[in-house]
Image 1: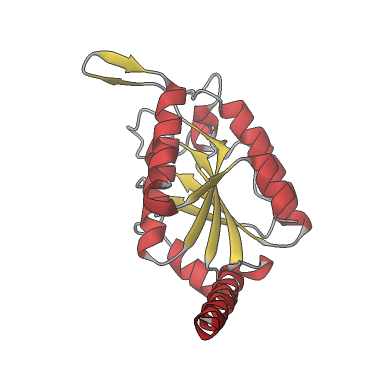
Image 2 (image 1 turned 180 degrees about the vertical axis):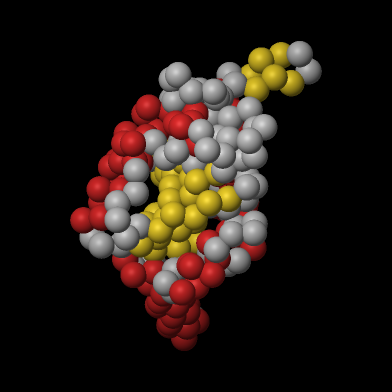
Length: 215
């Protein structure tokens, strides 16, 4: 009986040692983490061609994230969607397609343009992440259920670990089966979907939690 208890004790110690080691190995450091700001552009704000619910709040929280990453000299990537001239919003050459002034890139910060919801598709994003040895992403941006969702799911295919800052994202209402689905329901449902099956695609945090827990 005593021998059995001794073995149980040894197994327990070994289990927690291995678990702790794996957890430590999986913890990102500043050098391997990048902030990716997706499509925070003028057309998504009041007066634009595709105003989103909560765009101002999302931009304010994104600005806080930018402040943190800049102060720590960490990698920042701005994604800018450029549609064709005939696009209903974010059309090439328009003011609406310009990056929003409150989260505008500073000199030296990477700006990557795209033409599809997935920020990796036919862009330099993956190559740049590899160049910088980035393994972890912190994502903010617009729209939650379109470009943010598409990019996060694609990141999983490249074995990138992702945190989405939920209150630094925004979207708008949708219509299905003749019924209007409120923006906050769309936003929440898509974020919840990313965390399914044990955070399969991403963890979802709030800005204040990320800023306090990642000090």
